[in-house]
Amino acid sequence: MRDQFLPAFSFQNAIIEPWSLYFDSTIWIVTMGFLVAATCGLIGCFIILRRMALVGDAISHSLLPGITLAFLLTNSRDTLPMMIGAIAAGVVTVALIEAIRQSSRIKPDAAIGIVFSSLFAIGVVLISAYADTVDLDAECVLYGEIGWIPLEDRIVLGGHEIGPLPVIRMAVIGLIALGLLLTFYKELLVTSFDAGLAASLGINPGRYQYGLTLFLSVVIVSSFESVGVILVIAMLIFPGATSMLLTDRLPRILWLSAGFSGLYGLLGFHLATWLDASIAGGMTVVAGIIFTLVWILAPKRGLLVKFVFKSHSKGARTSSIETQAG
Amino acid sequence: MATPVISTGQSSKVFVPLEIHDLTVAYSKRPVLYGIDLEVPQGSMVGVVGPNGAGKSTLIRAIMDLLPVASGWIQVFGKPFKKSVTRVGYVPQRESVDWDFPVNALDVVLMGRYGRLGPLRRPSKIDKEIAMACLEKVKMHPYATRQISNLSGGQQQRVFLARALAQESDLYLMDEPFAGVDAATEAAIIEILRDLQNQGKTLIVVHHDLTTAPDYFDRILLLNMRVVAFGLTKDVFTFENLQTAYGGRLSILSEVALSRAQKKLEGDTHENISE
Image 1 (cartoon, each protein chain N blue to C red):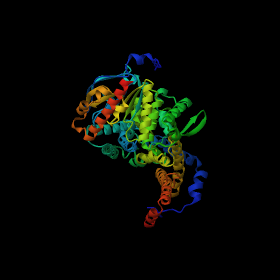
Image 2 (cartoon, each protein chain N blue to C red; image 1 turned 90 degrees about the horizontal axis):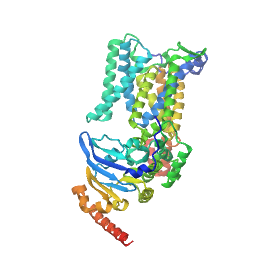
Image 3 (cartoon, chains in turn green, blue; image 1 turned 180 degrees about the vertical axis):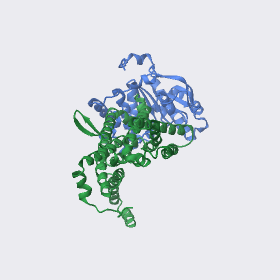
C-alpha cells in the first residue's frame, strides 16, 4: 500500500530531475515509448480502417503461448526465436479465426473471442506451469515495463555509441514499418478502401491483408517487452483513432499519429515518474486523456462544437435539453 | 518480371471483350450460376437484369476472378482476367465501401489509375490531371477535395463513375450504378455511359429497374441463375422471357411498366424503320 493515494506533484522531482540527474536513461525511455507508440500507431491506422482492431487484440493475446513455447523450446530469451514463435502464433490465430468463421455459423467477433481467449489461456497455463520461476515473468509479458528494458547493451557503430540495443531494434522496426508503408501506400489504401476495385486493378487484396497481419505480429512482439500484450492494443488504436477525429486525410492522420505517439512517450513517462507507476500504464492513461480532450474539443467534429452548433440551429429544443442535463 | 508487351488495338478486333463458356459458380457447393454461355460483342451496352438472388453481382465478381469458378471458363479480350486487368474498369455497388474512409473525392478517382501505375510507383501529376478531368466529366470537380462522407448518394456514385473513367478501360463492369441516385444523376450517368459506348467501349451494367432497362441498353442479359435470354433488347425484352426470369414474382406494377416500355420500344422501332 502507498502512504498516500496521490503523491504531491513536485515539478522538481517529476519533470526536472529525470532530465538533469538521469538524462541518459530518461532520454532512452522516452524515445522507446515514442518508438513503440509510433510504430504501433502507424500500422494501427490501417488496422482501424480495415476494422481489424479486434484482430490486433486477438494477435497480441495469442502471442503469449507463442513466445512461451519458443522460450521453453530454446530455453533462451533471444529475440529471434521469440519473434518466430510470435509470428507463428499470429498466423495460427488468424487462420483459426478464418476457419471457424467459414466453416460454422459463428460470427467473426465471437470467433475472435473463442480463438484468442483459448490461446491466451494456453499461454497462461504454460507460463505458470513451466516458466514462472525462470526468466519469463507473466506479469512482464502481460504489462511490460519500459523502465526495465536493458539499457546497458549499447550499439556502437563506427566508434560512435548510438544507443541501447532494444531502442535501436525498435527504431529499426519502426523505420521498416515506415518504409513498407511508403512503398505500398497506394496498395494498402486501395485494398483497405475497396477490395473489389483493388482486385480489378490486379492488386491482390488477400496478399496485402496477409502481409499486414504478419507485420502486425512483428510489431506487436517487438513492442510487448515495453508495453505488454494488453496495452499494446492501446498503442495500436489510440494514435490513429485520435488523429481521425481531427482530420479526414489519411496522410495527415499518419503524421498526426506520430506526433501523438511522442506526446504519449513524454507525458506518460512524467506521469509515471510523478506517481511512481508503470510507464506503459502512464502512456496509456495519457493516450486516453488526449483522446477524450480531442473527442470533446476537436475544432470541426468535437462534441462541444456539435453541441454549440446544434443549440444555435435548433435553439429552443436544445436549450431545454441543456437545462435537463445541467 | 519483364514488362508485358502492350497489346495493340488489333487484339480487341480479334477477341470479343467477354466470352464465358459453360460457367458454374457455387457458394459452398450450392450453385449460384450454372451453365452460363455468353459472348458479348465489342461496343455493346448490356443490361444485366433478373430477380434478387439471380446471381447478377456474382456474375460480375466471377468475371473479375474474385470468386472460385466450379467449372467452365471466362476470357476477357481472349485472355484470362488477370492478364487483361488494365482493360477492365469496375464500378462496385455503392454500399460495398466505407464512406467514412479518410479520403477525398480526388483520392478515390486517383485509385482508378493504380492499375496502370504498377507496383512502387506513385500517381504523377499527369495522373492527377486525368483524375481531375474525369471528375469534371461527371461534374464533380468542385467537390474534388471534399471528404467522401460529405457527398450525397448521387455524388458518391458519380465519384465511382469518375474513378472507372480514370481506369481508361475497354470493358466496364458496373454493379447497379443507378441504385439510390436522384433523377439528375441518373440522367448524367446514362449520358456518360452512352458516350463510352460511342467510343467503342463495352459496358456490362447490372440494373434492376425494368421500366428503364429497354431505354438504356441495346442488349439485355436476362439472368436467373442461368441465362434466360441474351441478345438485342428488342428480341430479349419480351413478356414471356421476363416471366421465365422472374417467375411469379413479376408484380402487376412491373407488368404495366413493361407493357408501357414495350409500346415505347415498338414506337422506336417504327421510327427507325421510317428513318
